[in-house]
Image 1 (cartoon, rainbow, N blue to C red):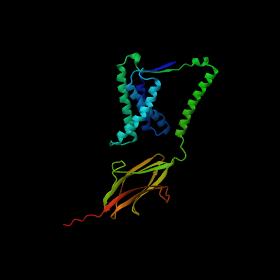
Image 2: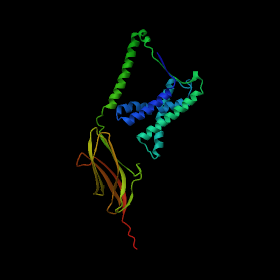
Image 3: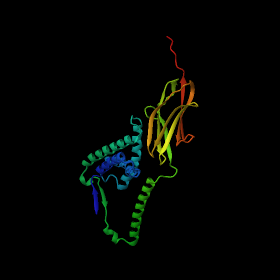
Image 4: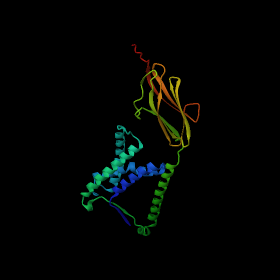
Length: 285
């Protein structure tokens, strides 16, 4: 049985849109990764290669597949680099939309270029499935075929198991601070006594169980603010803009952000900033 796919580009576009729907509607990590791996590692490069080389004689199958993986590895970081300098930043949905847009645009360019190629020379995917030849094979060939199919099934099963099973030693909590614009820059550096400094505090639970957190802000050795309790489920994220107010002047004052887990007395995570604090200026009338 021969399967001929005349427009694999349309199939790639549909799968890309399905991935966006899956990520938007479900939190199942296994499904996300199974669909997401080709979306990141193969589709961008394949559509780009299809746009550059619309004729089937320009590249053989091995070259086309190898270049698809190689160019995907080059294209995805480049898109991430561009996003880093935009208001959206490197986040899940901006990356999804950008990659999907790239794939759809390259698919459209490839389809237009194929339109101007003679039909016999156009690239198409041909899959030949012939079970009748299995009976005519030698015992050695039959055994090798069965072993190969079994190895592929075992590899897929192992991949799914590894992805879906929590790994020992990977339990941790993300704890971070961002500037007011939501980026790792623009932190307060110079304040006046009594002036509020602002940062965005973030916590992400990767502990594979619900955890209750408490955060404290210390300026020097004095506690300035307490936040919480904050209870998060596994993979749940908490992010909030918080303020701190220095009460004494000084240079290179250390502002510490401490995260406590499940009422433990010792900090679980710690971050800090350095600020200069000046006295208030009194205007004489």
